[in-house]
Image 1 (cartoon, one colour):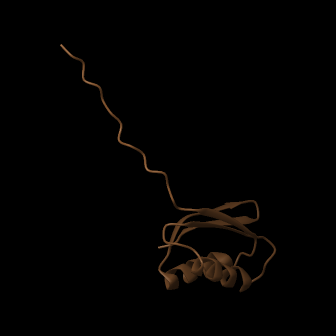
Image 2 (cartoon, rainbow, N blue to C red):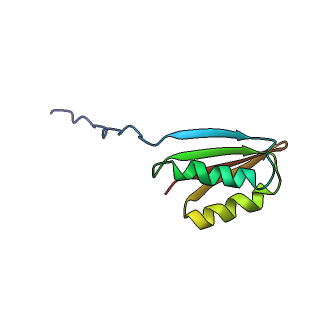
Length: 89
């Protein structure tokens, strides 16, 4: 009897780009304004990771993303640094 070989489907390489931007030290409204500008230049599916220290970004960035229609995949806080992972739609 011949053994059947299981084949794996070919994995397509991801074309999405991921960029991390350090916005530490910037105060409101600069992180949101710069994020809007960066997102406008990105292709659908690309990911933008924003690192901020301004506590108001926890309000500004989600409101911006609601306006643009993009998606926040994750948020986090490590020490004073707030991180937002945003996927361009």
